[in-house]
Amino acid sequence: MEHLRLGVNIDHVATVRNARGGDYPDPIRAAKLAEEAGADGITAHLREDRRHITDDDIERLVEALTVPLNFEMAATDEMQAIALRHRPHAVCLVPEKREERTTEGGLEVAQDENRLAHFIAPLRDAGCRVSIFIAADQRQIEAANRIGAQVIELHTGAYCDAHSEGRFDARDTELERLQDMSRFAHGLGLEVHAGHGLTYETVAPVAAFREVRELNIGHFLVGEAIFRGLEPSIKEMRRLMDEARSD
Figure 1 (cartoon, rainbow, N blue to C red):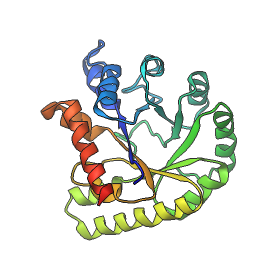
Figure 2: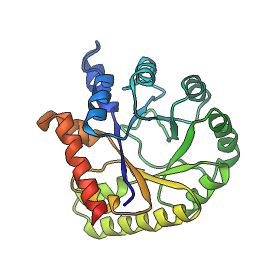
Figure 3: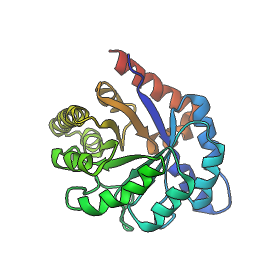
């Protein structure tokens, strides 16, 4: 059985730190605890407005981690330069708007193919695996494949929102779409990841998709850590993922 990787997003440890200033709690400490708890990688999103993760955080993560760093970023010249300086294991391109609370949807690739193809070429040449965070939409997946992305990460937010709001028909429709598009992307030769909004209640159906190789989960785990601690929270997520995969 192929191992399903868990990437732990530490952004919101930095959110708590920044709410008061200073250097506590330290997201790098959280990343190291996540490693010890069984995380296969660490995800961090350096936003244009630096609302949580900072440039110094990225620099320290590159130095401290023994598991891969997945560097989430917008497709801007500033972020490209930072990625090329640090050369993380993976770069995941995400849409970004200043007014949003969190990433609200997938990147629009199909209408921006030429620019994005030229944007990711230097990143690939530098040895970074390029991932694109997109909706479970065939048109966007085809475009991501054409521009040379090696990985896509499917946005699971609509599925998770429908579940939490009790819209179970919509939830099941979204889940079916995620499964269909996972298979489609895998058939094109893309590596398939998924994430956004996943919880203990919603992770199992997505973890069961054989085509999905990695789940990236952050906000829920940081929130759950308040009640049970970070290591137990991650270990429980790991258990649920493994159980779903074995079933």
